[in-house]
Image 1 (cartoon, one colour):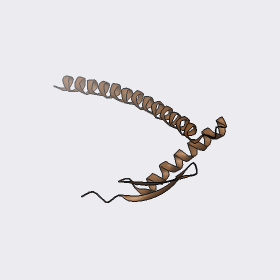
Image 2 (image 1 turned 60 degrees about the horizontal axis):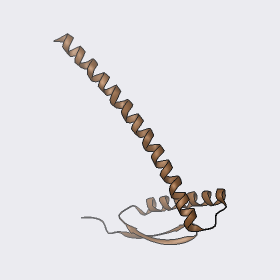
Image 3 (image 1 turned 120 degrees about the vertical axis):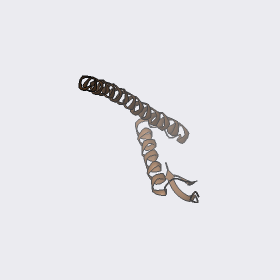
Image 4 (image 1 turned 90 degrees about the vertical axis):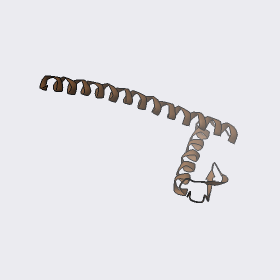
Amino acid sequence: MAKASEEVRVVIYDQEYHMRGELDPAYIQKLAKYLDGKMRSVAGRTHTVDSLRVAVLAALNIADEFHQIQARHDSLEKQVDEKLHRCQEAVDQILKQAG
């Protein structure tokens, strides 16, 4: 049985939002704080006061971070797969020599 969703009040870029969902309230607060920080950083660098523009620019920054992390993950995954393949070949070779 799914737990009942709890309403969480968050403030992002001086706007109050009431969120409801299955996520942990502390995690929702953490996400809101992260987004608020991104928006404030963007606003400070661009001197933009339009909150919609700030939100879009912050979203682009977060999307860039995500894609950079995803690319690093994909690269590491490829390296692990290559090492695993070499290990499997080594084990196969040892088993072949032992047999």
